[in-house]
Image (cartoon, rainbow, N blue to C red; front, side, top):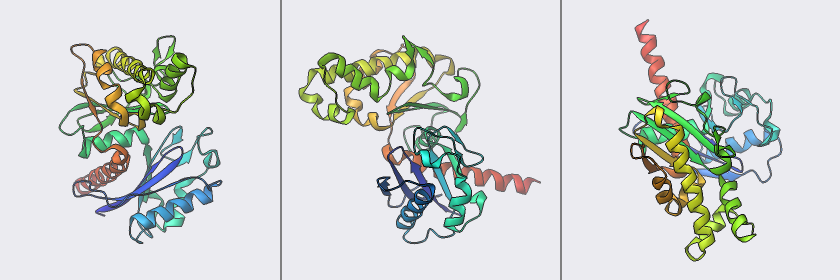
Length: 298
């Protein structure tokens, strides 16, 4: 198969596109919020509607790869999330999706959203051409993924436990306390006594010095975390993605200032919101190629 339906399942919305094996090109992206979704059946139906739109009516019988946040049993296809999309907890999504899409169970696959993001940047974005790459997703949480020679790794020299950096001890708590959306809004609240979203702060920042300082403080901590946690991995480049990366102009200089002289290069995602969708395609086609090669060798 030279194309696959890909899905990026977020906390508030989901998007879908068809990814082609040739250059990992995406077709039109369809997306929707979960406003009226309150059950696993309604969630799967929304996936099918978006897949049908993205594929021009050809979703029936197509395989699908989904980028999903954790905790999630990726092999079984079962969500373990309670704080996000609680109606999916314990549901066999592989079976439900395969039944609705009319495809085999093994044609429905899942991978971590941070892993999908990094695979996308490795295949067709800011991580192309590098052997040792770290992907960091900046948003409500602090996601991370590590890759060596184009392959994801969750262990080895310099890789935090399970490849996760969010819970690494840092400052008076953990890294995510200082590098996340709540860190930026907390920085602003401390300075002004006002509560604002990160998106609103990014909008007003050009004329609001407190907003500028809040993003800069976030950037300083990001740079320090990278400089203290990642050196042993010896990454060549760190690719920044996630919603906060859209405002990189407000914190990237501060982040670079907090790095050591031998720290990796910082780059912002080239694929942006499409990175995880592309990454799902990269994962599918790479795995299929490896399986075909293994079958021929036996």
